[in-house]
Image (cartoon, rainbow, N blue to C red; front, side):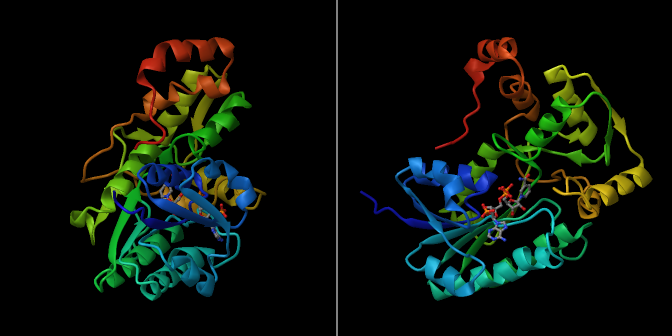
Length: 322
Ligand SMILES: NC(=O)c1ccc[n+]([C@@H]2O[C@H](COP(=O)([O-])OP(=O)(O)OC[C@H]3O[C@@H](n4cnc5c(N)ncnc54)[C@H](OP(=O)(O)O)[C@@H]3O)[C@@H](O)[C@H]2O)c1
């Protein structure tokens, strides 16, 4: 029998990270998930192969000690908005340097990383995308020196506990009348979290993936407006989408970025100025349309739930591929 191998999963307490932790654990990896507030993520502990620990991963010494005894590291740490000026650089670039140093100190030979579609150090349309690109470049430069690196650039990711469909569905469920939508014509190719996770897990031992960057997209392209309309139609909400022009979209970003929760910022606005779709690579299978049609089970009433169970029970989407 093969010896279990150890994996350090940085960002394993997040939306994608949790799904990945279960998928790795199901494949027999012993997964360590360091995080700031372990009590919030106890659900991970139902799997005997997952270890949850409290740690400050931004402390280079602590990171080095976490890397000891691991065979591989996956990094998912990332932020969509800055709390303090410089946070994008801190978590998307400086943190990557610390991860690479910790890997070399721990003798780790395999490092996988989740970046973002459109990440480009030179041409990214937002600071989020430029710093993501810079971090990725840094990784792949070091990847030439004995550390086998693979990175993934997903479009927007959906699935249970996402911050995308859930957020819009949550807001729209409380809304009526015209919903003012910024950047309504931006194109996205939403990818299901289970598909992304399967790609990452399958790459770990695949030598063909060493040194490569993969774009990851779902099978459909939607505008942001079409996604909202899909949610509205499915949930039968009394809401209509009103697309905002460039000027009003910017104004909305300026207002919302100064409110608690930062629902939308100027940097998000800039990210949405480039289409978030794949021009090459294999597309993943799971349809966002199909997924959203299952939303009444989460947000609707009992009649919707019963209809969902009856219609879709045969085509249930696997959350943890193994
Ligand atoms: N979700 C998407 O649609 C999408 C699309 C493209 C790319 N990505 C990229 O995929 C990665 C994972 O995304 P996600 O949606 O799973 O994000 P998420 O749910 O926000 O999780 C982010 C993870 O990073 C950790 N983290 C953030 N700031 C930290 C800090 N200051 N110190 C320590 N840990 C910190 C979080 O730990 P705590 O639990 O301690 O907060 C959490 O585990 C990110 O790099 C993101 O940029 C996501």
